[in-house]
Image 1 (tube, rainbow, N blue to C red):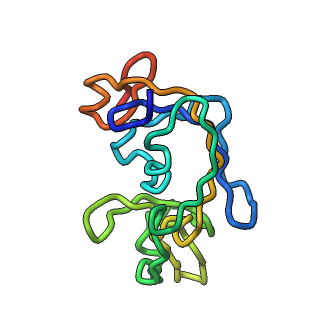
Image 2: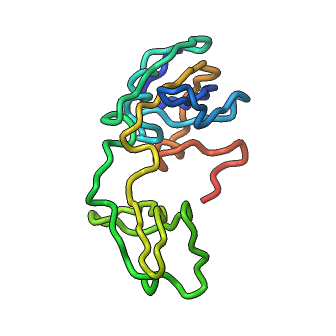
Length: 160
């Protein structure tokens, strides 16, 4: 069986920067996604298309096919009053917010200077090449429910 749309694919992977820094890793076969449902970055999904169980390969995903280029317009300074009074603010703190297009985005506190808080709506990996070392562990047909929901369900069904 080859990887194609509507297949559940399990992979082992190591994700590194161009400098070799390990950003993420899954080597126990537990990372599974629904192919063709935008569950992973498009560059990796494209590289996996047509692969089979046992295939091992490396792929470099450019920012354009990963998390996009950095957008300076997504960095802004806001007043502390924009946050709940009990919010613990420190550099690196992340919050969910609504982006200009209405879709949810993650906002990261980039700097704090008194009551001026610099927030960054870019994905932390925006502008970064993503280097994946991949091993395809399993491929199976997705259930109708998984296809309808657009993601993998666990062994005990879905838990939304």
